[in-house]
Image (cartoon, rainbow, N blue to C red):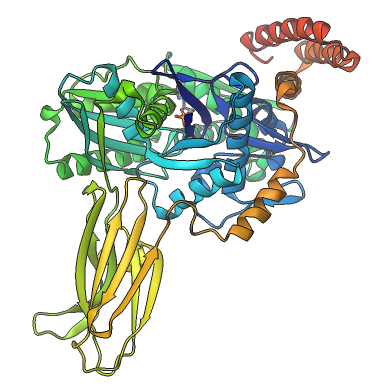
Length: 566
Ligand code: AMP
C-alpha cells in the first residue's frame, strides 16, 4: 500500500485509500492532525506533536516549530545539547506519522507520496525527500500541494469540466495553482506562490501589535520566553478573529498581567503588506495560464490560514465571488496525496483519471550577454525550461565557447526568474574539459529534463569532442551520500523518543503545566491540584484508572481554559 503524507508547517497528517476512498489515519492521540513540533526535555527525551506544542510556551529553547520554513537551507536548530537540521526534525515528524499509522492499521508504512509547496525550489524538495529517507520511508513521489488538493477536489466529480483556482495558504507557505479538468484529465495550467509567506506571518503581526499596545520594554520584546508566550496567545486570538470583530490578548509578562484590545480593522491595516504579497502570485499565475478571473469556474481554498476572515475578504474582493467552502482545508492536501498514491498504485477506482503538472520555476543556465554590436557586456540567465511548462518536459539549448583557447566549460544550473543569476537559486555546476580551439568553434548542447517529481536532469553533449556528461540534480535520493544517510539515520534512531502510546498523558501534563504558567491566583491553584492528582494516578500505572483519570483531567482543563486564564 502507498500512503499520502502532508508534511505541513503547522500540522502533518497521513492518509490512505480505504475501499477506493482517501481517508485520514488518526495518530496515537486519536487525532488526524499531528502538530509539526519537536521538543526535548531535560532527560533528552524527544517529543513530537501535541505534547511538544504545549511545551513551546514554557520551553521555547527546547522546542522547534515551523521548521518547514527552513527546509533546503543550511541552518541548524539547537534543542538542548544537540543541533538538528530542518530535515532531521521533519524526519522525526514523519517517523511519528509512520509509527502511529502502523499501530492503527497493523501494516508496515514504507512507500509514500509526500506533498510539497508547488513553489518549493529544488533544494527544498531535496530536503523533503531526505527527511523521508531519514524516517525510513521510500518516497515514491513528491506532489505539489495545490495539485494534490486539486486531485482530491477533482475526484469528487471528475466528469464535470471546469477551470479552477486553488488558493493554498498554510502556516508558512502560499501556493496558487490554476487547473483545468476535462474528460477525467486534470491539467495544471499554472502555478505560483511564495514559500516564505503563511499564517505564521499573520500571527507575527498580532505579536507586534500586542507588544506596541501593551508598551513592552525593549528587553521584554527581545526575550524569547516572553515572545513565545505572546505568540501562543496570539495564535489562538488570530483564530477568534474569524468569528468576532475585536479581541483582547492577555499575557502574563514578568509576573504582571498585560492586556491589549485589538480591532479587526486595525489588524487588517497592519497586515496590508502581507495581503499585498498574496496578490502578485495570483496575478502572475492567471497571466501564465492566459486566463482572466471571469474564466474561472471555481475557487478552492486550502490550508488552515484560509479560515481567516481577512483572507476570505481579500479573496472575495479579488475574484468578485465567494470561495467554495465545502472541503476541509486542513486535510485536503493529504487526502489528495493519497489519491496520487492510488494513481501510482494503479488503483482501479482512478483508472480514468490522468494528472498533468507544471514546472513551477524557470530553469536555465548562465551565459555571456552581448550587445547589438556583439560585444560581451556581462553575464545573463539563459532560460531552458520556462516556468509553467507541462511536465515531464525536455528542452535543449546550444552554447558556444566564448574565448580562444578555452579548455573548460562551466555550466551553472539555475532556478528562478531573474535575468541576474545571482538572484536565482544555483542548483549545481557541471565542469567539462574541452579541446583548445578558437572561440565559437566548440558548441555544447545542454538538455534539461524535468520530471513529474519536480526533479531535474541535465545532459551536456559536446559533439566535436565526443563528450557526454549527465548530471542528475536530484533523482530520488541519489544526491545524498549513502554513508552519510546511514550515519544520520542512526543518530536519529538512537534518540530517546517519548513512547507514542503515552502521548496523550504527556500532552495533558504539558498542557496543565502551560496553564499553570499562564494563570494567577485561585485558578493557578486549581490547575496545580488537578495536575498533582493526575500525576499521582500515572505513578500507580493502573491502565484502567489512568484512562478514567485522564478523561476527568481533560474535562477539568477544558473547563479551565474555556473560562479564560485569570
Ligand atoms: P496548515 O499549515 O495548513 O495546517 O495551516 C496552519 C495555519 O492555519 C496556521 O498559521 C494557523 O494559525 C492557521 N489557522 C488554522 N486554523 C485557523 C482558524 N480557525 N483561523 C485562523 N487561522 C487558522
